[in-house]
Length: 418
Ligand SMILES: C=C1C[C@]23C[C@H]1CC[C@H]2[C@]1(C)CCC[C@@](C)(C(=O)O)[C@H]1[C@@H]3C(=O)O
Ligand SMILES: O=C(O)CCC(=O)C(=O)O
Ligand SMILES: [Fe+2]
Image 1 (tube, protein in one colour):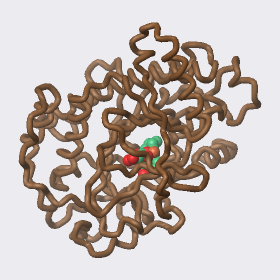
Image 2 (cartoon, helix red, strand yellow; image 1 turned 180 degrees about the vertical axis):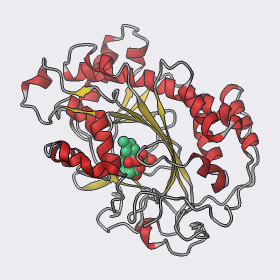
Image 3 (tube, helix red, strand yellow; image 1 turned 45 degrees about the vertical axis):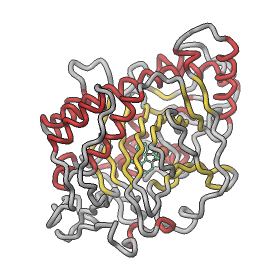
């Protein structure tokens, strides 16, 4: 088992960017017209696997074979279907602009209703997130993950939380390690000072304040888009207007940057294993490489990146809020031999103590309750201390809840599930 204590490897991988150059680039790429990226010497992206053995730095770009902990069961890693998933592209501008386009609104509502009743995925355009900001957020991921490991480790994940830097979740799991590095941080608005700026400057130093400003603005845009999508979901489910929007007004969400290096044996591992998102709604900005797949009728169907669009998927918490009408579905991320891939996942989460309960009126209330009342704090704790989110998280959680308070005794330390 990899020790919690993250060993600083003997030598970081050959990276070139210095944090100040990185920070200046982050600021520049957001505001000015898109300047050509700094010609940093392309580092050898890899996954540095901190381990109990001090010098055990896996430079996976040079490994002819992937280390055993990264090998996934055949069923999880089974081949991708050739048939891409036909994910509807929904123009949410009709709602944002409130331009009276009744036909456009009816179309958007129908698309969302059909998608959420089947595989739970749709893509949105007309979202209002500027191309420059989206590019700056993706560039920021490159700039961060290309830093030397020692600098990334300054943001290493705090056990029991999602916030921070992880390399393959090697600090949590002993097997089925995902071929990715991640950086996650919390977002909520209404704080005395910008929480994301404070996170970057406080964790990585003042040089990273410009990067923090990029993600602060990005998260603010994601929050606004989330609330617009909540209105669409109210309309598609026939729920009283404002029920879901109000429920998430004081949301406390998670922003996650995923970085997937090229892999010498992509067919034996996964960038992110099969799972349903435990959160309420995910807004995914992916680069043009591709790798997101959804399980539909037993096949892993690729979701092709649409330039300028964002991928939306329903999570377990919203499946419960819709009493099962909207489906939180299995998805995964595959990797490839040639190209690194980046994706930015904004996970909308309720305020921790809000009781997750579907509306008592309307079509959603007509069917018997599918899930018990719960709080996001409980479900979050379950995924961090008791259960690795996978194909049946909500069912396992419901069963765990029924064991009563005794089950929490095991929560003394974050579990390291296999
Ligand atoms: C609440 C969360 C747990 C995870 C991050 C957010 C929402 C998605 C979850 C996750 C991505 C699902 C797949 C497994 C996981 C361990 C991962 O690969 O990162 C999950 C995240 C986590 O537990 O950190
Ligand atoms: O990177 C992707 O395409 C998907 C990642 C994902 O599903 C997640 O982080 O929950
Ligand atoms: Fe996911």
